Image 1: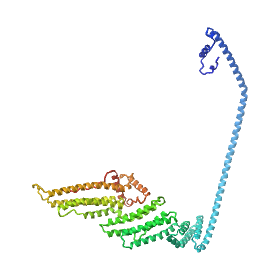
Image 2: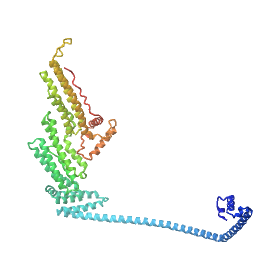
Image 3: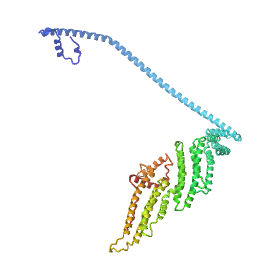
Length: 570
């Protein structure tokens, strides 16, 4: 019999009995079920007795083992209590140790502070004694005339002075030390000048080391600038005394400056730590110390040229300057990380600065120049056919003058003079339209069209008809070229001056204008030669107008000049 099913959680009595009968002998199936059931009952009773016996034995053993378990639990409880007491004692010991350690560390810190103060006091006393010793020996040292030895003494005194800041006579010691440095500088000045003049690398290195140690490097650089500046200024004065035209004199000056740049960079790279900055400052100081100055020379040259040629002559001068600036830019380009951008920007201002007054009034100069040139294009002639022919020829002359003005604006102002250019072009076209209209009225009078009564009979005049056709064709050509010129002008302005327009600029927002200024300042840090902008600082109103024009052109196909066609007819 299978008694394991009695342990199952889903035990079913009926199912178990039926299974027991099915698994029984054949007699149970033959009709002796009662006998088989009695057998099953007897077996179950025997099994129950065995189970009861096993339970009794297990219970008896459990009762016998219970005192032992209780004793083990009690012993474990006592051990846990003892462990707890030991943990409390250990915790107290740790806490006490931490307190003792903290007090010990505090004592050590205080002792270390006392030690540091004592060392500082000892060093101060030593430095004070060293100052006294060096001060007493310095006069004897100066008698040796040895710049290196004197410099070492002064360096020692300088180091001692840093430890004597809190002494009562500190300021007097500083004054005394500066006086000694001045004596050393005066003593070494002839040798410094000789070293820089002769380009002696070894001697120059010695003086660089000496003046670096005594914190007098700016004074040493002043000697360097003076020595080489004198040579360049003398070369300029020699050029000014010649009979060469000013543009040739400027070319000679710029060649000398560019040559000095290349030679001095090679020499200064072996002597100074920042050779590019040093030579940049040399050129800045030289350009600012020229006698006569470049602004005076430009003013004289423009005055001598006269009103008709002043702009042309100014562009010749500017061409020499721009060529020099391009040479410097190319010389600086291979080593951008070695340059001080602030000094390079100052150099750019020094090179282009003399032209700033003329660039700011470029519009007026261009307008005067264009009006003079258009006045030299006469439209009025004696015969009607000559007048008609001149009107036809004047169209190309007009737009030739306008295109030349655009070229001058781009060359001289790099597009920043666009506002002045547009004003000059409007004056040019207004003058031309006025002359064109006057000529048409003159032709009408010569043809006596106004004298013909309105009720008179029509008379054929094929000559007047042909002239009228030619004048109409001229007007059509004028309008066609005007449209083409407007488109070309817009494209050239955008391609040249468009770089100054920030993407965040908006004419309705002051913030956008400020953002464009900041963007220009950031971009100027990349290449000051390409981002030179005289207009933004010196004429912000005109610069704002230029930004509006560029903003408009960015979304339009052309800039409208509002050129009115000639009025009147033949």
